[in-house]
Image 1 (cartoon, rainbow, N blue to C red):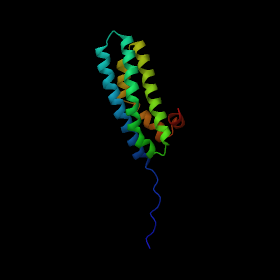
Image 2: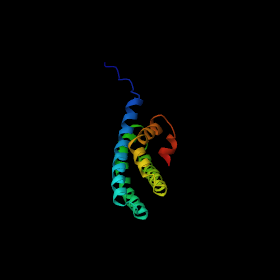
Image 3: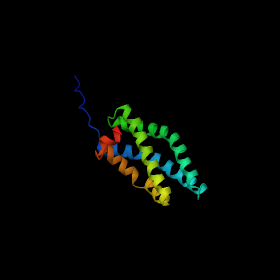
Image 4: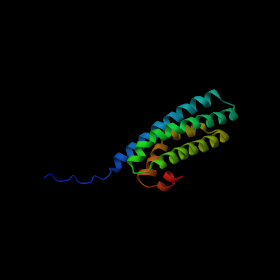
Length: 136
């Protein structure tokens, strides 16, 4: 008789890589779209703000789709995916609106292309602000 296979525990480094890659994909799209919009709407902060609202109204669905499998693999309930997608978009909107007001869009784009994906992975995999990220 064959021995049952021992229960496998999630590999934190694999989980981290999956979440970070999902975040990087979403944030790269955001950074590129924001850079194009900022160039096109330079000197028109109200129009750029309207673009932000329109972009994230549509981008929300992509974030949810992109994070569904990684978050489910981490044991998050399906409801957490939708909550996280909303939180992710809200955080991006806040950062961009603040940058529009202070003329620091380049810094936001750099953050989206750089450290933010790592920070998101930390929230889920290492437990940093894990409850808030999943329940916001």
